[in-house]
Amino acid sequence: MFKKIAKFLKEVRQELRNVVWPTKPDLKEGTTVVIAFSVIMGIFIWIVDIIFTQVVNFVLF
Image (cartoon, rainbow, N blue to C red; front, side, top):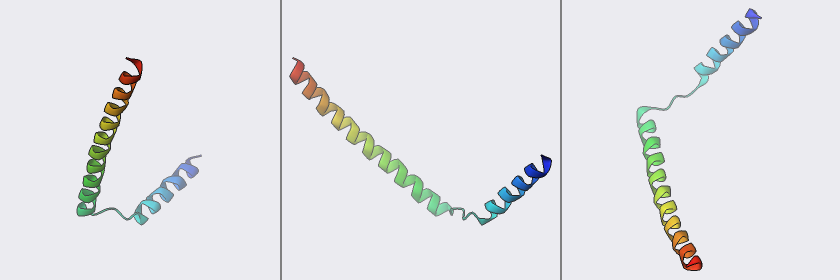
């Protein structure tokens, strides 16, 4: 059992050496894209919510 665990950890270590880690500029760019997209989607959902609220209020009242 311990041999299997040791083998697993050795393979994990080998795989982590193959990972291409992002550079700091790449990380900043990716973070900026995610934040911008989140803000845009939040505004879009807010607008759609306002429209649906107005439609429901019009139909019910």
